[in-house]
Image 1 (cartoon, rainbow, N blue to C red):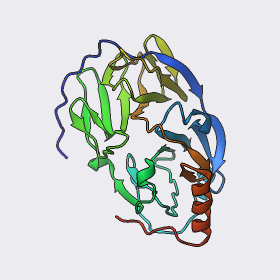
Image 2: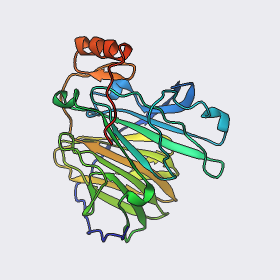
Image 3: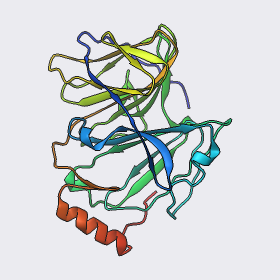
Image 4: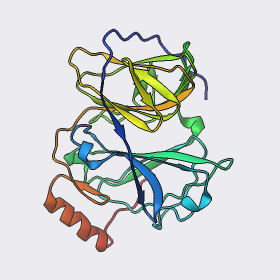
Length: 272
């Protein structure tokens, strides 16, 4: 993949940090240990995002069981992304493996509008080489998973929610500026080092919920030390959210139907 040339960005009215969030230690799948950063009580505030999990370990036994469900198989290499649209339902399994004795990853859930929830399921694996990347003159290495940054369009676009999903690697002294529509909900999760946003220090393993301010035009992230962070934003759907385990619909009746479909073996095949 050729290296794209980013355009210069200047933010004049950066967003402030509304509050810092500490994730909750929990387990999922077959007892897989993880930190749930975006929990159900934040779903309305961070609409259209439903969940963010961070997981990582240097202990193989923490993840060897994986998330046990049968289905199609594939291999995600270091730095890769799997983008799945569950839609009307799909059984899936992920089994994390270590690279050089360490494993680290994230799982982000993005809500679908009601009109799309019964579409066929879909997924695609993006290896690291498939993901657009660039380095700013200020020393920030950016991977554009979804949305657009500095004129570089990411691997995934979704019209309804216009998600932005950036993986940022900031060197000490670096500064990163990113436009954000005022009506979009946004947050930054720091997973290595520490950053500053509008004068607020955001340490590792903390999520900075960015304030929604009508006059703001984006976010400015600064690092006094080497740091890594996810910048995530999207257009809210303003629809009811009803969640029962892995099922997310708009009404209780739809949840009951989804559970019945699951037990009846009616979940769809994945379209590649």
